[in-house]
Length: 357
Image 1 (spheres, one colour):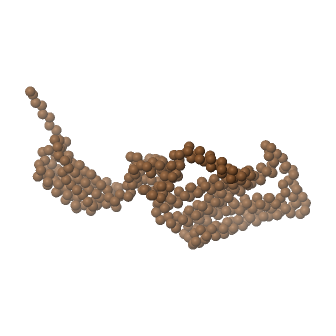
Image 2: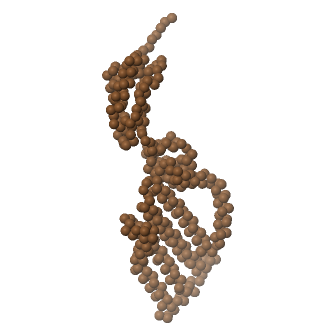
Image 3: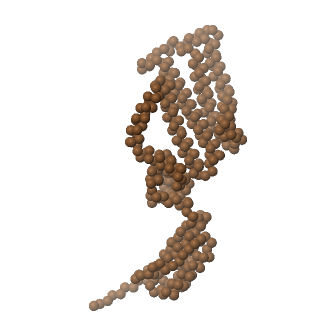
């Protein structure tokens, strides 16, 4: 056991190998135990319906972190072999190996933190994500904090691997950041606009909106832009600043659907016929359950036609297919009424008169 090989005794090698092998056998149990404790600390309810989903999310990252950290700690107990003292690009091989090990450890740690943050987001979504707006806000901040954690990981690598003073770097970054802020003014405006959208809530994911002469369903609100699936099934991306500065028609928040129907009647139609037609059109609309309010009146008259206006509002409880079918039914009944009463439209006949001097 005291025999030395590469500057280390066999007992030291057995200690390191035994530690790593033991960890391979028990890392799953330890990881599930830690994940279960995290669930209890964050969710406050170990009997959560999503417990297995939460555990699956963090168990493997915890296993990797335990394996990497304990392996590096165990190997650090060994003396670096004299045989491996050489330089690569003017750097000692020992320094390069230790730096690589530290980089791996930081990356694994940051990935674990990201998974824990996703774990917290799932817990918050389960407890407070009652609406689509809440869920979208949770996704937004989850992605935002992912970026923050990645930046922190880069700073940790600079501090512990390259042994640089972070305060100096942060001071330099603040100056560079100010310059970048001026250069990336539009990106910052879009980022601020995304916060305005989430807190003011002019629309949320899943709602149908009309913006910039385009109608579609909001699929995702990101840090820079909003993704919309149009009624032609195309996919467009609109910068958040435009979504804030532009007038938006939130179709999903309409309390009623409005239908405007205009009848251009022939000038041969008498006033008595127009009065009878108005009364008959009102009867058609008042007997229909989806119609909540309506108006029928002679809108205008002139040298070419009498203009009859029919406006009615229907409930939003109908699906779009049911609404279109109901609208078609009203149009057909109006056509039948005109035919029955012998009322012709202004363009139904054309007469040309030729006179000679």
